[in-house]
Amino acid sequence: MASKREQVILRCSECGEENYISSRNKKLHPDRMETMKYCNVCRKKTLHKEKK
Image 1 (cartoon, rainbow, N blue to C red):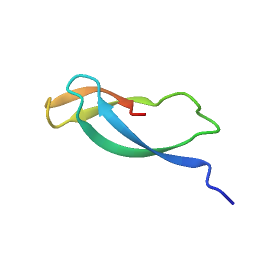
Image 2: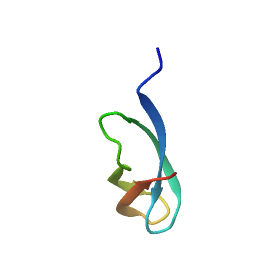
Image 3: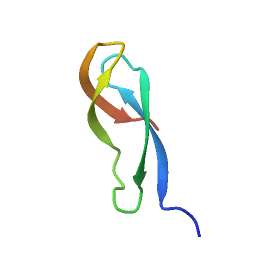
Image 4: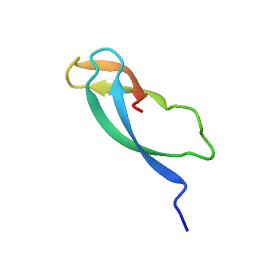
């Protein structure tokens, strides 16, 4: 049986650095993922969006 979860890469919206790898259920959440995470390059919490 195929997995319903997919790996996503989260990219900082300010500097463009790819900092995090996460997973999401693509059936329950078909939209792109957005979350506030800490960016080591910016040295602050910024909005991270899913890279496609």
